[in-house]
Length: 317
Image 1 (cartoon, rainbow, N blue to C red):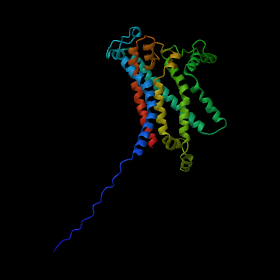
Image 2: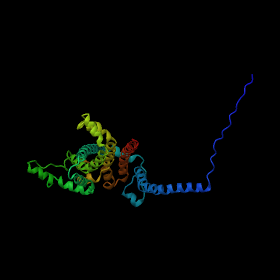
Image 3: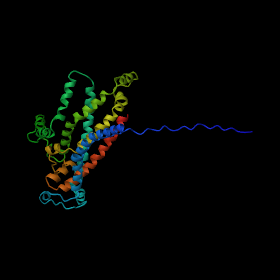
Image 4: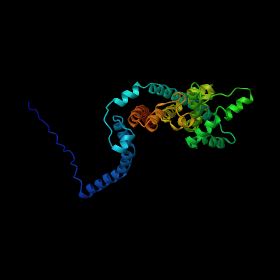
């Protein structure tokens, strides 16, 4: 018995023809065009962001003082500046104050901002006008706002103490008491940050479909239940972005504290940002000031990475 074998015809893979000279030139032009858009932005970032950060890192390892501007010599001290910073009692105080200032500001700004955003979500006469007025503290220069609040909180002639005196309350040393100065500074920073939180959270609330609330009301989910099961899950990504951005912005606050208390009294309002300013521009120890600012840069960088991760997750969702 003989077996017959059948052979299948071989199939050859399609051969991609080589690109023509005109196509190669078009691809090179497209690649060059993309680089023409990227290079200016890369140069700008390198000059105005990369170089200052790199210079600051190098300065933190040098004995960089006012003498350096005349002699051009900045002796290398290695980790000496960082050791001096970490061993300083002012640094420990500034770390604690930075944590309290940031946590207090973020919590109060967010709670009040969310309450106002929910309030303005209900349309009523003059709601748009009132939202516009709410943005005024955010639009004013920070140093001007701090000057006005310093006058309002002054112990002797401040408007707030004069108002308290009408009801028989003794003048309160808002800005000169070590136990009250940080609270007063947090209050001013909260006043300045509420418009930002309200605006972003209000935009997030506008994206929640009204049909969800109508369907939930049929099941009895109204009031707090509607907020818990519909509003909060819908704006969770917006809340995360608001909190992370608020932390990054609050960590580097300098002008408000300098305008109100200058970091005092008795370093009770000294933060990492103001500590770096004092070391660099008051004590003229630029190397130590650079070391403190590098610590602040690392902390801000961590929260910036968190913000980028949250933003990507929100886009994917």
